Length: 148
Image (cartoon, rainbow, N blue to C red; front, side):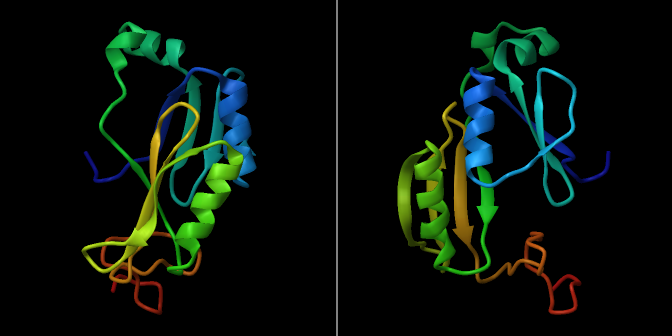
């Protein structure tokens, strides 16, 4: 198995509400089968799928899926962008769990939960600068776009 994630699927209770939230953040949908929404990202995609259908696909009851102890990170180019993204998420309907603040490791971050409770970290990491197109690599990219 190669080391990668191609698609992350979030189970949602209300597709219309979930799609409206991500579109309010400025994300654009890709063409997808009826009953799901997909947003192409840099090198992967995020799908929204009805929670009941996701559970059925897994052969589980919806309550067996739980909330999960995970977060999805959205890294930004500039330190000041952390607060800006958190505010945009709040305006789109997110609950801000932690306002932007400097971190113990030298960056800046905060957290929000989307309308279904999926937790997103917004972070600026001076040790992993993003590529010009926003791509993330642990340890960052050198100015030429190669690993730093």
